[in-house]
Length: 417
Image (tube, rainbow, N blue to C red; front, top):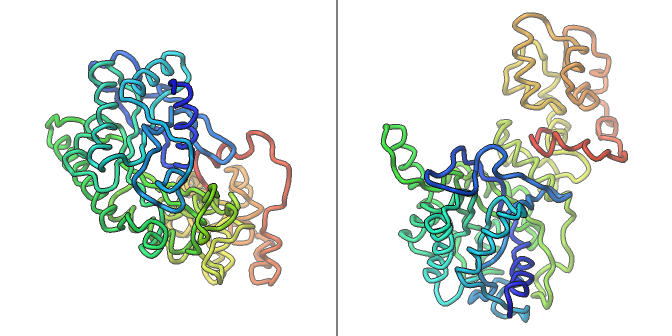
């Protein structure tokens, strides 16, 4: 099998892993001759559902000794198999980079022989790129379940980001569909990465110059819709990982049906809008002060698909409103639908000099059609009379319209809702 055929199989197999993104690094490795993680060194392209496509995203191999039922590469699958050598991945990365096809590498793998052996192969790719090719661009390595801590620490020396995929949101889900994976072992691997990152940052603050270790942090991925687990449990798991392991990102990936799937798996993917709502809720937890358990307002413990989670929370907690934009705290302002974090910052700045009126909010380009039912301003806001009406959901719900190409660009970049 030639390299082109291997690439067709292994790049296609990697599409199910959503846990790759931009670098987040702020410096280029010393001594590098090509590649950069700074500024425009990594350019991002996004598919319509928001995934980054600027990296060479590929598996070292799709052979795997595990039998995770949701995975197309499981040992019992009859999918075509292929395996790159370390030198082939190194050559592909450099040649693609020089042709400006990619800005970085995301490398994962099925598990072959043992977890440590597979991890050593992944590390060899990153090490060769750094030491022999003097490549300073972005590298994201997926760590292998149960790989030893010394190997994970070595991976962090060569990679910008490490990720440990938790895959399913609860221990019960893992036991049901991936019994070889244990949540405590996955969390322990994350904890080991966090400790090493913290140690490196502490040494840097103390004026020392420790070896680089995963400067873009760590991330994970959760598959959505493979089981009946509701969104509230998914968000609780994400919140625990953000708090406990200081993750940079949690990625949510809608389950994709695979050939000859287990009968316990659903026959179709969940709607992509569910993935989108989870990302919005994730943003509310990280930057708006919401708790995972309060975001989900629906009786079935899932996020509403027809309105964003902040508006859904506001409709379920009308006693919290109206919020006076001239007196409210930053935390209270962040809970108003249609007003994002940047607008809150501007409101706090403006009201040092003047009272805020409706026209001021409109000039700040807040989503007034959503915010108007929940805010009181220095002047009269007649829409507040609708706050307690039973049809408020229908009034506040965004009207369906044909979007222009760049209408959602700002939301995609900032996540503001």
